[in-house]
Image (cartoon, rainbow, N blue to C red; front, top):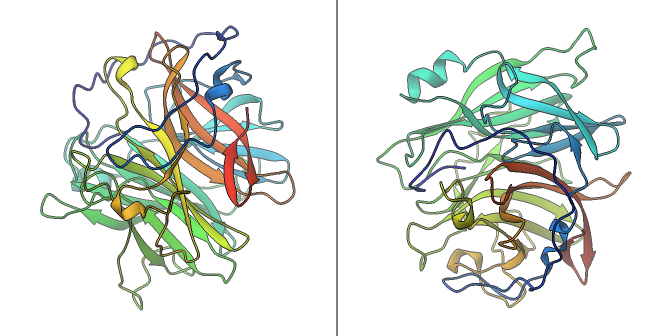
Length: 357
């Protein structure tokens, strides 16, 4: 939720409503031009009937992990009635969700100092390595790339555990007006060989990647290489962000949000979920038609239906061999414009993911 998006109405998030069964979907999703990639993999049947309950709105940019038998979702500050920053939801069944606290009681002072005008924290990513849970988060303001990615750690996600304590580890990465990237929307891949990769970026020159030191959670000084993973050179302002990178089988899959979120008119919220795959965590990634994501390629997984929900995006794919792969994202309910949490199974057909309804 961010970047070079204009006509933002910060106060547009309204009270939570209970959703009735949505109207049947009449049209299949089609891929738009401007580097949109190949045919759609999933029809928007995920919107036919909303099945989640509890504290599921307003929610943006969710990231999910399972500890023992509890699922935890971390999300962007939205002004929801929860104390603190980076709200946490929890669920035992992935259907009924409740608030379980927040990472911070207030925005860290160093973020306020480095990002003048910051009013909230965005797009947290939850991962586990080196015996710690890591939440990478972003601080920025709309339309600016004066931004930071910070890190908070905790040995457990269970707030009843006596060891539960979020420790802010400070700055990981920053960008400023002189840079060609935006240091927001962090995402972590812990690869099968133990290497850790931070994927990030929004608008400007697209999605970037740096290697992380597993011992510290900071950038790996021994590898200063910046990898470029996805870019939309033929689309005005390069509207791409919210990446999520996973490794399954012989492929790495890069999910991304194309187009714009956060429009004051919810019918103009054009976010859609795209995916490409490659054989290296550093790319290249291509869609089903072979077009490189550095040239605007990718395959569309999901777009809004224009009737019940618009703008699905801010997604995180979560692979879980024990309980099944899922994808979490938000979508904008129509006509009121409230962002809702979605948690859907992620299935695989012929080496490509599909969002199950």
